[in-house]
Length: 221
Image 1: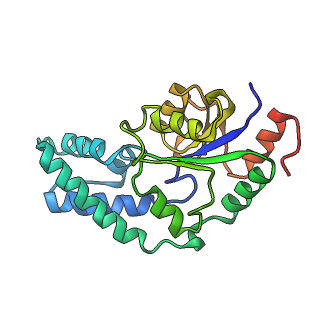
Image 2: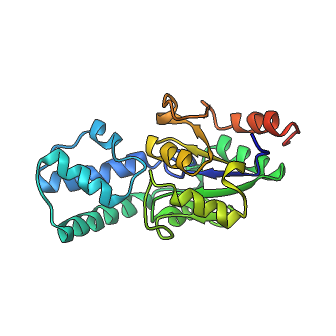
């Protein structure tokens, strides 16, 4: 493996957990439409775009939505989600995550966010990381959502590093698929940790430091 120069992090579920806000917003929409929607259903919505989620919601319900109906529903869902995000604060950023990010940066690693969410910059600002990363590539920068590799490839371009020099940290299978398609090392955490797509599996965020030290053969901190 080449020397690691950069980390590209998914946002939701990796740097901060907004799963509950997503679930509540989708549940509210499903309730309004009279569609049964469970937490198990919500698992398939993780890491993909709102419009793709609308296709999944249509499949759950057995109904057909017009393009305009899907757009209107996705917009309504996002409005509910944004209201729920207002409760986020720097206190929602895990000390383990912040300490690890600081150590990686002190070790000379470039750090980026690669998220399909169009709310990524708002979330980062809410948790006190608004100007922290060397690059942020999100749903406003891309035409295709994960599992397409576009978001990660663009993030690497922003950082001016090769895909092979980048490690993607993801908690969703769609994100791991995108990382592999981009030619990057795929690191799984959380819900994706058992996926066979993972090159690396970590239980704790701080394990990233020890991994980089082994690959680069030098101390990060």
